[in-house]
Length: 208
Length: 198
Image (spheres, rainbow over the protein chains, first blue to last red):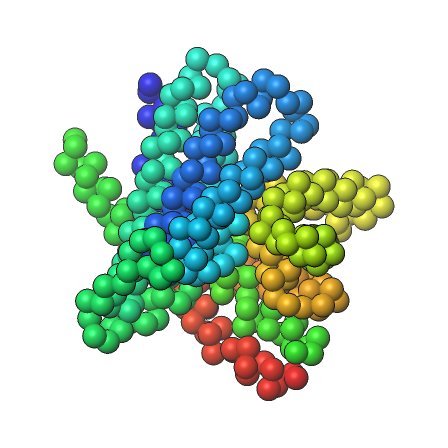
């Protein structure tokens, strides 16, 4: 258990800086951030579940292409589901919908490299940790998307099904439109990482 | 758009890292290389890998998937081909004995996981370019990525010497710097480039 605790990344985005760049481009609204985060989490969890049998059956030199192909297959299936669920969100995510296969892969790769060792007794713990990190990635992506949209445009787009997702306009004018651009995304995420570090440090002090 | 317009746009206005968020920001890592040969090797690697990957995906998209109505499967087919393409490139580089291209093999995994190769290839396939335009655009995107990461590495080296608040050191300062660079690039929009370079 201590092995898992040591390798655990408390927040894959804000502490581990995983997939931070595609997240900036793909999380311009709550709906887009949530769907992107969900897709990445599903992809990483699927890879974590398939990895042990894959290691046992596929030759070492074919494992990288096989993992990549599985990741791409999962993201393609997810993209089909999103297009059927909400064509507007799928259009908003554009190339980032298929690209979440790579984000899922990097989240999975983080867990694989932080805990070396093949298909052994720790496999279930490793999978549990990966699942927890994936859920945290999803929550962070939704939070970043929601924050950018709310401060940037004064609205919140919910990931509801149908041709156009439900949008709540909280403020009549866009307070800081810059935040929905990549430039604003980089800046906001930089500030969030700094705030997260300060909070984590305070939390550690209180814990002691 | 003319070829010069596509190249200028791909390097600046549509920068792979700062506009599309492809690849990764050099938050930590080795210091920027002062060796010109190493820098040239990095540029060649990025340009070659991206140009080849984008051409392959463009051909698959235009000649196989689109006629069959399977355009949504492009990432899946490309994933099947990406690793063999990069392995082939790195083997060709070793066989040719050109030391300049050796980083291809070392960088292959990083380029895939960083979503740079896939992203640029997808952008080229979906931008409505011809094959040659896609080739020029993707090569220029690789150049733009190298330029952005090089500038950010220089900024990081300077920031390490500056008196920043402790919580802002490292990733937060780098992300804010990237944001300011992206803000500057927002001034060079595609319409401006089209008016300037045709």
